Image 1: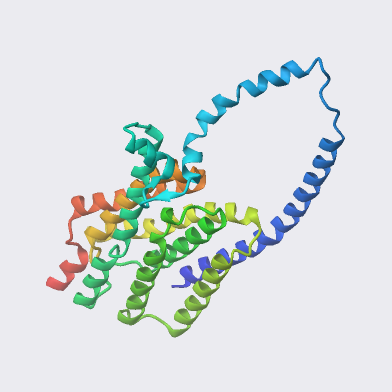
Image 2: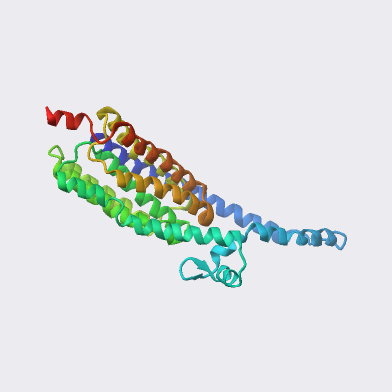
Length: 311
């Protein structure tokens, strides 16, 4: 418990320090931009001899537009939630555009992930309620998962990513909070001070992320922290499963949905957002959740906890 509170506090301190540091950096960047615009205004216009060279560069524009087909498709208004208007018209006329096909698949996957997220942790919650036990479940993992989800929502709000690429995090945050409350209730070692400190910390993080009040560069910092948090969220569970030689009260369906969701998000991120930080986050999730998934097949549900009960 002390380790969890220490890490929560250190994350808040890092955010504050990062915010102060990047405020100065953004002020300097603005000054540089002002100076550069003034220099561009004072720059001489091309001479008649240089005009043909400029004309040659404009001829390369069609090649550049081909490279940005996916981006322009994403900017078009949606029709029937999964098509852009231009892509829909192409499909109606019998034209097959690869970028349009990938965009439509990405949207279908995104809505599927959002729909599945409503029941993402439901099997885990039901299992805990039916057994009235949280043995084999790491509370610190739930803490880090909730922080990571809040950071993900805030990061996507800041970069103005399509809501279909991250909306599942809203329902996941609620379900993770329910599991944390159940752990507090069913674990006799839980202290009231720890509960109060955790509520304050989560409320503060959620408010800051939702209001989008931090400087721009802090969000890159948050994205990197999120990847580290993913390690803290899943590695303790992997370690506990290894020590117990079993997965305890961990629900297979929940872990499988987490792995499949991250795998699908790798594709949707490449197609719609193209953000390297988000891509690294989802790739990390594929590897870590895949490891937990393998533990179900290696150890099974039985472990040291159940062996002690039988004795």
